[in-house]
Length: 129
Image (tube, rainbow, N blue to C red; front, side, top):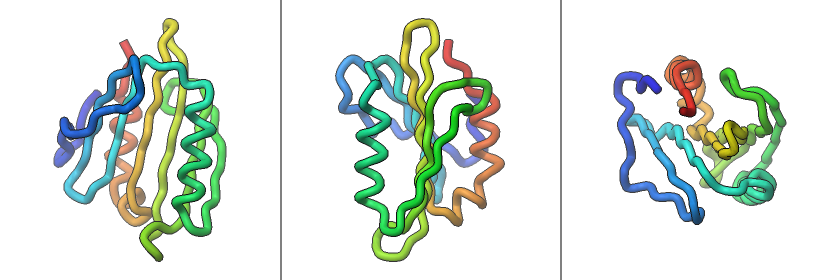
């Protein structure tokens, strides 16, 4: 995957999910792109969606079935955090060669739009080997 200029790997983030590994990337404005690989994710999507809906005020979610060149299940949730900060999270899960991969994209709504080209580069260059 190609990281756009200004993005770094956040090595302090560790997954709490057993039998999995993750890689997390941030830019200077706290946009996040995370990849989690190798766990059973049957209930993961639903539990994250429910968790985020409780954390976001005025939460609205939409589902999607394709992320980059991968087909699977995903949702985007948008709402307000910390009182009035518009925020967006996207979570997508797919299976490849018997492995589960979950992609998480997070940013304030303003930064999601500001760095849309960066997220697009990461989506286009991500390959699960």
